[in-house]
Length: 272
Image (cartoon, rainbow, N blue to C red):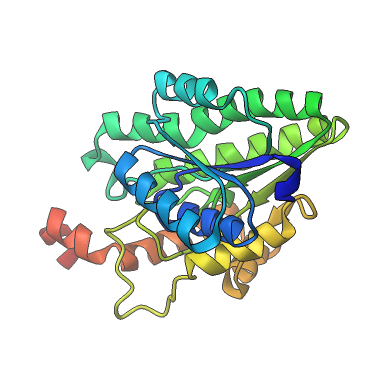
């Protein structure tokens, strides 16, 4: 990540949460960064802050990656730049009882969480291979390893991303493109505002920790799981519990952290 070779790192979902934390870590290292998100004003604020605080080069692309036109726009606006690192971070989550959720929103999540990373990886990995190599990071989640009640669609999109990244990793490695997969658990961000940890034993990770931890292992480790409790959950599910038991356990967890939302949407059921 040497800024002197005129290469860029592209971060999707860079206006807040883990995406902003990734962009900030890169700016601290004086790595030119392409900031991608829907909110142009937030991107401008982040860009100005980085220039003033770190003196780092930035480029902003305000695009909605859940639409093909947003993908096309991002490709157009970066086609003359050498992107050596792609961080597929942008994502969205809807939570609650499945039958109460909007199918439109769930399809939007599939587009942003699955289709966008696939399309961007196809484009940028091809360019990286032609340029002599690069690195790609996929942001999945600890929920990707089993079905999870109350966030079933979101967990399924992260499972797709995990399997997709694992599948292309061996293909691309021979062409100099290294794939890493980050699978954090609960993290302080704007992804899931309906979650409440009051009265629960769960303590979300700081976005800054997740970003620094995974960037340090990018290109060196295939699967990166930040946080001790998340490593324990991963190994429990992989070696000690069935997928069904794992789904049930995660369902109980999300019933706790979503209790306020569930009570508001269906108070009778939650009291019973």
